Length: 107
Length: 119
Image 1: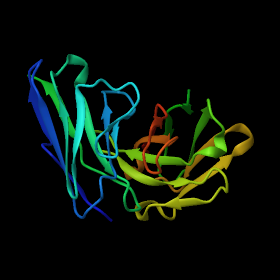
Image 2: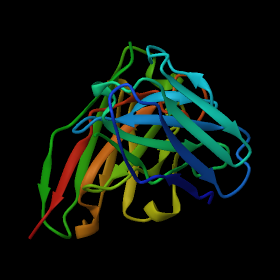
Image 3: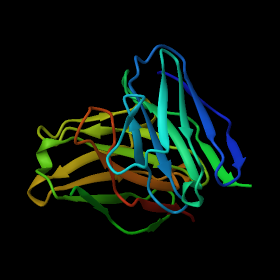
């Protein structure tokens, strides 16, 4: 199985700040990577697929990049509603696997 | 729009079975596969597998082979997860999810169903 390693595990940032979350795959996943946001008490919601494509309705302050084994999620101008956990997920090789998650809090 | 509505919370004893439902609406049920994802308390997401809603064929991730069963009631646009011989480590929230676009991308999720295992 492909291992997905996310960093950092937790992050504290101020409103308006730019935040970056990293995700490393144990082998090349050819940009078959999604990012999900999970707010406390809610189900995950798709943010980005194919490493850099924004899902419908997702604000443009979210962006994804990367290739090969290294990927990142960037949030520009952090808003209070962005407080959540973020998970990466590869869908290049079955079984699909998730990263361990990054918990984002406000400073 | 696609909506997945799951059954309510369950409280079970070790060794019992539990059945969780996931009712789909807003699309043709057999067009998209249904995924299942486990989230233990305070933990991350763990992919359990999926069921082909056209053929009914389930595919399980290695950690979920044996006691876990995916099945369908296609006439009711509903997918089910049954867990047999419950163990303490099965205590978690279970999500169903589907993909209307790319295979493997979960773009619609149920609200989750919590299972508590306690003697």
